[in-house]
Length: 572
Image (cartoon, rainbow, N blue to C red; front, side):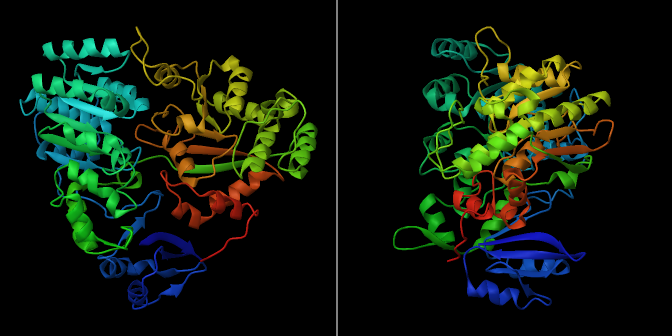
């Protein structure tokens, strides 16, 4: 497999070629390109950016992941050519809120095709045209009602978007088993529902009831959102279960490009019914296996790319959106005297040392010591030490920064890795009437609630002018929420993976973002000088790790430790 990304060296643009699995044929073809050179890393080469077309042609029949600018995930192919797809509606339809030109193209493709994989980059605005096409098809008698399956945390985001863009009558399935069973019977008798939204978890649990409802009143369309979660037909039950609901039209949705292994694409394309092979003939056609059945090499990749490109819509934010520029603004702070004293104690202590009266968050891994240092660098109060600004230089810097942001009439999203610090900030800045997402808030609505508690916090931040800030635990809020009311992102601590940091940016830097009074997306990083924070910043800046990291496969512990200087890198 090859990974290709654009880099700039000395003011000149090059294509960086990283060979993940050595193949002398690939190396030989790279060496035929004028201007090729060796990279600094093992099995890494470079060619002038002007040779992109030649490189594409010579590697067409290999497994190549192109890492485009602003897209850390990469893709096997660019997808359908939309240059000939009209930017005006091909049928009579008017949404409640106008769609943008690229969204109308999505709408038109959905109106024309019974199956499609929609893989536009996160933040491009995939969901509105999908929902609008459902409404248009029902209005024109081209389809009946549909079912939209997604992650539990996203069900109410889909509902809210449907209400904004369409006039459809939509229900979200949830609640107790008894409530859901009654609801299935009610749905079988009603004729006024356009779309049913449910989570993958409930789809698995209630599959027999979903199929019973389908037999009584067949769904016309199935939408599988975040479809990379169900890509494996061999090892995951839900990967098998999605095939049991037979509908005429099927649409897969995922911002994670399909995918960094060719075999991961099989189940998605098979579900879309565009795959002309069963699993075993697919493996024989495209994969070379060793004696243990492990894939050691791919073959006939050019044919596979053609198949994928014909059935996937894939566009980047930079290609279709006029978004404000992203400006990174590191803010360096000095630890308070109390922080500095405790930081040195933790830094010099043995792994098993017990700190009296302090309660570090349990990090059961080789990264525990580094995680402890990050906690102290964020706030002593997190571990039961000195409270407030005396124990946290970052809290003092954040207070000043938020005051500046709010004074200019803008909003901010504050991310932290620590649930404890999230709660500390929420209470400390209570005067701002903040919202919060810390992982303890349910993504499902409770009895009598129209939306989930998590979505209530998102709606408060998005819609309430008296709520200028939302505090978020990164792991709980880096996907599944839209926070475009803010054009400022503040990180008090960061994740190890560059892809996770990209996801955080994607909450704000997406369709609907106007850039506030500054006309930009301001990304602030609070960095404690002389601490682990600086090493983490270096780690995230390493381009090779941005290239190698993905949402589903963040950096390994060994990779992180090697960059933090705690372990020697061994190249095999």
